[in-house]
Amino acid sequence: MQPCRLQEVTLSLRRSRQPRVSVRSSADVARAMRHLADDVRESLVALYLNAANQVIGVDRISTGGLSSTTVEPAEIIRTALLLGSRATILCHNHPSGSVTPSPDDHQVTQWVADAAALFHILLLDHVIIGANDTYYSFRDAQCLPKARRSGTRPEASAPTHLVSWIETDGTPRAVFERVQLSPPEMPHLQATLRRLEEAGEILHPGILAAEQPPLSYRALLHRHPRLQPQPGQPGRAAATQLPLGVA
Image (cartoon, rainbow, N blue to C red):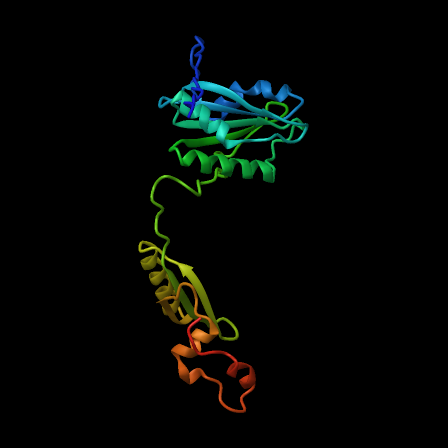
């Protein structure tokens, strides 16, 4: 058998001698990338930062059409790893001049945040450059998404509880809500319900641990046999077709 020769791949990195620019806010990003406003096609650029928030690299990820561009998160992550960067900022232009983010802009931001988190790289912001020195920052607008996947262990979700009370304003009516309550939130809700009860605004407030997922009708009948419909009761024919095993 002839020996197999595999081609070795070598990657090189060329650094610029220009002084590094520090980025402290979205305004700094918009100022540094203002030239994108002159592009007639939509372009996406990634800025890579070091621990001192200095830009150590800028990469034009893609250039598309008049209203959209193609984004591959792998391209962004690969360059970040080559540079040893632990944080990145996305920046792209809208040739229309508007800085309102599109649904695709939100989706791309989420994709990159997810991919970056797998390598413990932070997506610090996504800035859209528009006309007349306008820009939009996902971070400033509090729209920067949290990564849905990461290399760390996910936190356990808060337990579900059934919160109930009877409204006394007008015709009495019962209110039931399934709520996720963390341990710090529980005493706040309990104190509020007691206050409303003492003021006569509600009656019989309660917080009970809820089934998660909720019981099916068949499981309910299995756990509480006295809820079985009686002969001649409306719905009896349909109910008898249900097996009593837990769903």
